[in-house]
Image 1 (spheres, rainbow, N blue to C red):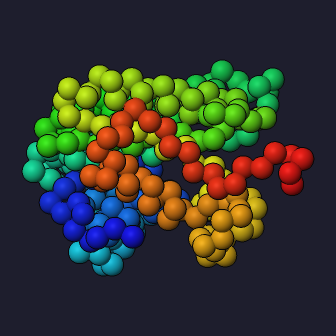
Image 2 (image 1 turned 120 degrees about the vertical axis):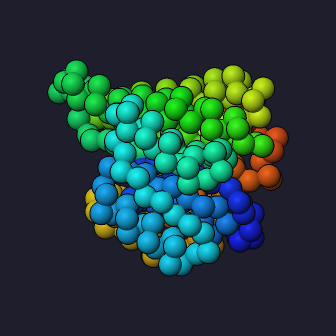
Length: 256
């Protein structure tokens, strides 16, 4: 979809990159020429992603084990990422996130804080820590990850919905603050996508999805990766502070 030298000599950092959307986005950026720092909590899975990138693309990859709840770990990620590149980081994809299902009446304060800490606070920590490195680039680009649940809410997901809605507001604010430093910030809001978690719950694998089929409401991870790639590309030079939704056909109940 994009030429393999689109991001030549640029460095991208992708959190939550050990599986699912993070893995797909890291691969797509590497296929387009970026050297990629992949970060997540699962060190074994992360190393496999880095090996995959270096084996199957012409890009270099560095895996760094990080928990986005740990500020010191994120600072180490910044140090390793800037050493891996030329002192700047052109792209940050703040993708790390978590969820579990529970009604509000059964949701402990600790459970609430855990999800908000990973999703919203983790996104803030990563953006805050990489601010200087992004500003050092000719044009820094940030993509954060929301969800249609952040827009619509969902039963048994109030904690997740609130965290994702907060990410959208955070991203708009970053775009306003960082424009003078030549940094663009946008947010992706995916609908239902055939990630490993969805596959486990619904039994629908990504390889069964026909991307040429318009009439569907289940996305392929590569479709989200393509949109992330657009948002950090020169083609989106006039796009900042926006939230892009990718959810296929969203039908009303009486249309189904």
